[in-house]
Image (tube, rainbow over all chains, first blue to last red; front, top):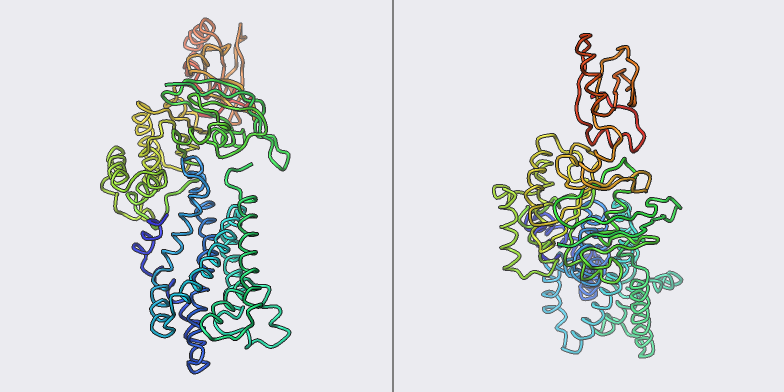
Length: 235
Length: 300
């Protein structure tokens, strides 16, 4: 599936451009509105958005390939199993995001100067985000039978989990009681960990531990549900 | 070469619709097996179960010794399917389509490249190899899918209505390709084009409302029919008394008499002497099919 993604970008370069624009546009808005004060958190927000949206995009892309091209049916009747298919498709979504990732990682390197420890924390959080969104996307795609609905659902989830929550800026910018709503999204916990790790947010150690626990718990639960509920072979 | 054996396959969907009802049969896995039936007869359900895409409610099947439940992973090494309504991915070229499918099946980069080229060459598609699928004709797009599944090591190919929607010329081109491919693979195809099954299939199964009502070579189906000849008469022709036979009339008034050899030649002689226009042919798969599923005579 990696080559499918590469072929799509090669045959239709506009796909490549659109995957770059989305995370960078919010970064630009937040940076301009705050006169550059939140450039660092906005970079981290862009990274969260890329990883989370990539997983969710899996939902609509898989649904498209399953319902419109019957690719999943062809794959089911082949030596490829569901885990390999999900893994391949997930990596393909990362391939789509590589151009945007390269820009954001370069900006992070130049502006944030992260230490190895910070890089490790940011990487683990982003991988957890990706695992959550991939499991969610794959599970939803196997139940979907209409690509129009899938694309709408994908956009809605991306908005609810990657755009509205405070990932491009610290949660302290959201007044009560709305900040409690923000905690309904796992991306808020991911952003808190990343923002505190790079010094943009001061929170207690207990709160950081709580954030990690929530993130790991949500990831485990979603992966468990995905494994149990995903429909690979029709019944 | 082995056998495909179905035993009591039954499928009841969640909405309680019974799509297959105790289907049992056995065929050798060589040449082409054609499964015919009206829309909704259960053809797609059966082919999806055999291709390990769909769980039956009860019953089982073995293909070349591999059980669809207990040995589905081994079986999947040997099978490939072009589902009904499958389409070649628009943003890829035929070469990219075949190549990526082979990578999915676990081939290495170089072998996948080689097999993709060979498969496209076998189907005479080299000139389209690097053209976007979205720019190909309907027939060529269908060939891309055939080239895709036959590029692999799979020696059992399931094709669910492979020529539906194609123009007559493209359909015949595809028939020639399938005949060629069936020399070294087993092709299990479903179709509602009776002519297609008659032209292609060594053995034919007839599904009606989820039940398999007949299976065997066309010659056996002909022999098993009570009548072997069909005589067609124009509308408003007065009919003689028949010694043996069955008369049906199409909506446009064409009369069809199905009868045995002696009676057919007696009637033919009589119609000739009386100057009545008529046609006489051995019964076709159409005749057998329409008798089996209980339909009226056709106009053609």
